[in-house]
Amino acid sequence: MKCDRCENQIAYTRKYSGEKLCSECFSNSILRKTAKTISKFKMIQNDELVAVAVSGGKDSLALLDIMSKMASNHNFRIKAITIDEGIPGYRNEALEIVEKFCNKLNVEFKVYPYKELFDLSLDEALDMRENEKTSSCSICGTLRRRAMEFAAKDIGANVIATGHNLDDTLQTFLINMLSGDTNKVGWMDPDTSGNSLRKIKPFCEIYESEIVFYAFTNDIPFQSEPCPHMNEGIRTEIREFLNSLENQHSGIKNNLYQSILKVSHVVKESNQKQKTVCKKCGSECTGTICSVCNMILKLKENQT
Image 1 (tube, helix red, strand yellow):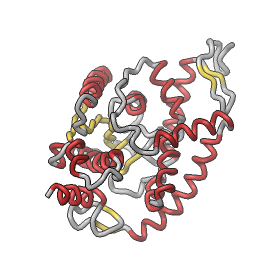
Image 2 (image 1 turned 90 degrees about the vertical axis):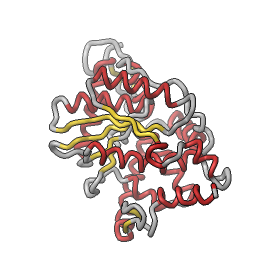
Image 3 (image 1 turned 135 degrees about the vertical axis):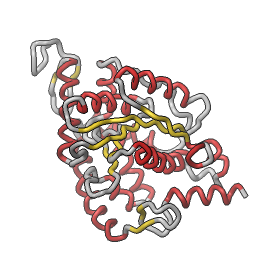
Image 4 (image 1 turned 45 degrees about the vertical axis):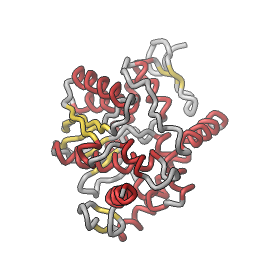
């Protein structure tokens, strides 16, 4: 069968739309969709420096590849930042992959270890937690967000771009709703143009399966070793549940995403009225102390 856009052999079929594409047309469609998302939500302004957060996984390396292509003919610049959580036997492979890929693309990159930023690695933080109910992902995610903010400021970036895709967005929304943390739903609004340091997700409207195929068809290497903590929370179960729904009802992920956009915008408006500044570090938050400072204080209290 031939591609719907050219005469080449098809390589990928989008079940939710029925579109059949060859490898080249598929890759171009991902590039165009990413550019459209960036434009629609005002993610990048002229002459800005974008810090592309690169973990070594398929999503972040595919994003770096696309952002590198876009930067060559758009008016913005990129640098790669990698956060090293200090997980033995896991992060080393990723750091090597990231360094080689950045060198291939001629993109400057820098590594920021937890140990240097917070005086503790992730494993040390996990040993200091009060009980096992506090998941590894919640601790790591909180520290990683602050580490990326520090990294962006360190290199003089205006924007932080992460490889979170549509599936990640749906999973995070359900996790927040199931945990009762509705304030975080407001953080999911893709339009962060009003923030002083913007965090953007150019892949937020693209299925994870399409990112996987983009990496495969463009020969992008990515880390094979899974994070040893990935199954400690409920994200894996939610991923499987959503994938099952999508298999039975093609396009349902897109429908849920559109609902999330509406809900997150309403919650964001409410959160804006409550925004204040952390008394310890000066970061914006919705309480007297931000989540990062609060977490580090609790961990160190547990240690003593």
